[in-house]
Image (cartoon, rainbow over all chains, first blue to last red; front, side):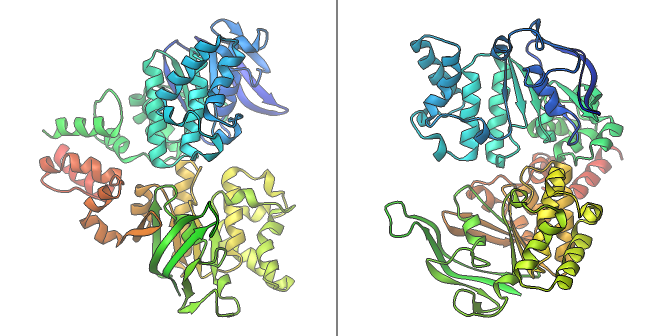
Length: 265
Length: 278
């Protein structure tokens, strides 16, 4: 469980996050969206202690990010960022994935097993001995995913993981995120792609460091005031779901199309 | 203005054990009256192709011509300069102390006098990013991500190109900023500047371009106007591209609507509205 208790961050006069209080339960899939500078990345960095709150507190499974051992916190909440080139440190794929488990001081066989499992999970096992430098952007990002999956954390924090990846690569990354959630892990995803955000069970809209909206994708679709502030064009399937009030459990293109068939039929 | 590739091939690291064929006999002509999208998988030769258009890359064989003149043979003053090339993430190339100096860098290299440089910078900013007018004296590094990209584009536009070639101009932008950038590029195009842009997204290609080229293995695998491609959507599938989302969604219900699939959101929604709320 991740808990914000009146947590805020100020950089000098500037309030990046203003006294947020909320709880993210174990196994929730929460997506964060908001204009540039709304505090999304600050939010993620507060959870794993890359930033500490200048007011209030943030806890991960009861551990206070400002007081308790950050190593223990990051074991529980693993983060992945936009650019895999900034995150990949090892020369080969297997060394890269081994880096986290080695720091957890796991036995050698366990590390080997985790490398295999994590690379299979992201469909990169055949690249185990390849050089990381020779991979495409999408492949590098999948290796970065494997690296944090091998940590077997309970919560995963993703800060715009698909923003530098092409369309086909993005779909693969979103599949991986969905499967991580299906394993019972907590997922916090920052994205500016609405089609990705609407796959979450809960959406938080941040604006100027405050929570503007916190609810289900369905309820957000009908909040035109919030959508106007975001000023992002809705992907066509979400626009259809909004205009015709379509009921479907997951707001992806296929489900929306089926809901539309039901309405028309 | 016309840019032509004639049987253009490019081999990286030619005559070494690492040589790679990036372009394999490409022949095509782009007209400045067109707005063309180039799609293709990673490694299909898209960027290599457009980097030939102003002579940054030289053909291994074949030729690149502007208005029928071979840009690598004929020393025609300013021929290559008519083509502005914008790399992916152009903002990483910002380096001057002020936004003005950065935008002026290209014109300065053209050898223009001070007055002409100033005029060109002001014109580019007015044309493409008037909101930067008040930021000309600040450091480009203090701009937001979207502003940096617009400043970098102004730097290319200040050289007054007749043709603009852009490598994934909207990569990394949020959807609002992406729509905004495409609209600004559309305005530039309507003022007579030729446009060719690389994208990975068929939705963007179909929404913003009037000609679509798909590259595969260094060759032109498909070259159609938007109108033609709308009638031959199956060609996209053969090349590993899904049709645009609007087409897929309307295809799902085309039998029930007895119309479609559609490429225009408005047409589709209007028809749905009539059926669902008669």
